[in-house]
Picture 1 (spheres, rainbow, N blue to C red):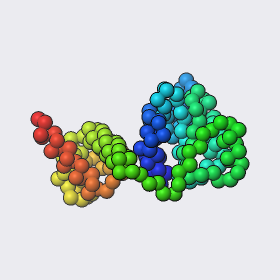
Picture 2 (picture 1 turned 60 degrees about the horizontal axis):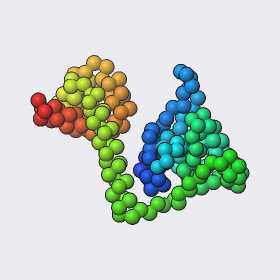
Picture 3 (picture 1 turned 180 degrees about the vertical axis):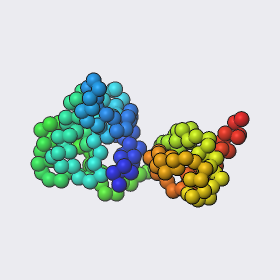
Picture 4 (picture 1 turned 30 degrees about the vertical axis):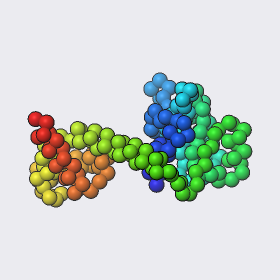
Length: 193
């Protein structure tokens, strides 16, 4: 739910006048990680925003997190959520100057906004899939394409569990879906030879 909501919010940020620059941006000082911001974005005036995304309601801890992360990045703090968990969270946000954008449980989009959000989602998915396919070795792709099941694949690839686990991190899909993606990779490779 959280990751899907983050993606949904990233697609909606342009309607708030913000352009996403990075997702899950690590805050580093030297070689020490101090935190992570869900989305780093900028507005049309090039002001930087550190955005925390909460799939549910934001509490005092979430407000503090947004404020501290934004200060570390010299950015403006923002939280996108479904509302406040209680009055203390609302009061703290006001005191610290954390902008809170509350979304209803259901978000209604115009047709143009829906087309824009779906287009962005498609482009993001295509880029993610193409990157993962580029990293998939030809030997793995050929074994996946030839093998209708896991045991056949393991007979052709050493450390098959590790290979499938790594592929699953990049493309969390079923064996059949990986097999179809391997067929796409091999078709593209043959098309551009």
